[in-house]
Length: 596
Image (cartoon, rainbow, N blue to C red; front, side):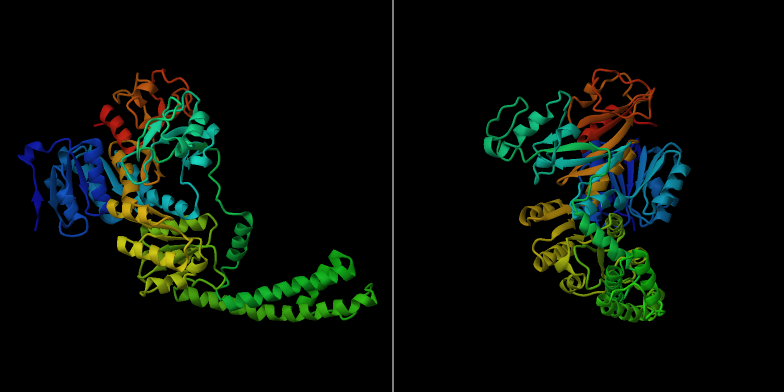
């Protein structure tokens, strides 16, 4: 059965529109983004209007039409008049189904812009080469860094050339690294984010004034405290550029300890690890005793290795009688510890192989501490766990579905996983939440994520918590009520990038400013785009867009940061790297004619 909602005279009305295929959270956000920010006609192809986000999509004001088709077939694409559309977004089906639909869409309309969601990024790169006007993006890959860095306490960054862009707040802002300043950030009101230029070199002055806001009231750019503006200025933030990725706020000794423990991750049994480590410590102490009384490091190593191999020499020349007793005692300890190495190593290998053959991930050991717990091993959870693991921080995952695809990925990385259905409190305790540094709840259900956050708070009050929430009102209340909880939405973070890509813009990445989204995009001035002949001041004038770097056509490899000549007209081939709000980037797309 097909349910449809049409405007008047739909056949004649359908032209130069955009088609969004999907009924999930990303499709919902993307349709809203296109309607509210870009003001373009949108036709929605939803697999089921009664499930998932189908009812919300059906109620969205401004949608040209909402069609229900279980699969994206040629019939469905023709019903949405893809042959007359400017772009199509495929954001809800499997990778294989999205690839098939993308090829069908371009078969019906060779000039159409195609954006498809792909979990397999490597495959997506190959598909982009097949689609002459298409882009493959991953919603989870776009949003996962914000979750991972939120758990680690490190700002999310986007790489541009040889620099990393990230957002710093208040006392962490360094005036000599600033690209853009944002003020009047209301943490609760998602619509407020104002970008200020720093072309006059007044960053240090402005920051000093803004930091006194709490004592003197709102700050005006003129340098004087302003009049009463209740709830208007919620803080300041700055987009900064570093030549290296922002460092982890973790001391070196913790990273060293994690590295040593990680080197032992092959030893799956905690008891076997304890036996092996005890024997190694005893051997090391014995070697130091022999060295002390022998006086020669080379001979000490030689005797230690022989003793470990069971070839101990009871009488050694050149040892004073006073030290002979201690040295002999050390030899006995080393010999017996050496004898235990072979059976212990054999047991470790057998245990590791048997665990691997059973296809089971490791369970968290008793020594697991100061780690990050990831609840939910879907697409997002798997990527978050991988990013945290790549940062060198221990990870423990919780997944109720033993058939989840992320379990195999966690097993391949050696990440411990608590598997099975049960109370979240019990699972968090098994995951050693009491000694964890952060909990990231990224299941597909808001209620489950909130439950995980509250249970984690009950186990350890000071733990850092990052939760995935779709509903804005729900996230608003959570953020306002719970102190150290950061809320993120995958669709909210990734939808602007999908919308910009659908408009033909190259989005390099997204950054979070509280729950706002700041887009880093690259624009190319070409004939027919509307950028040639304009200057940077014209592009920035209405607000919401700041040019942070320029690549001139004659020197495309050279990024000129904070380009000073704002009055220079752009020539064909010049490229701009901009920081923009969602509305700001949409305004550029409204001014600049689109291809096709």
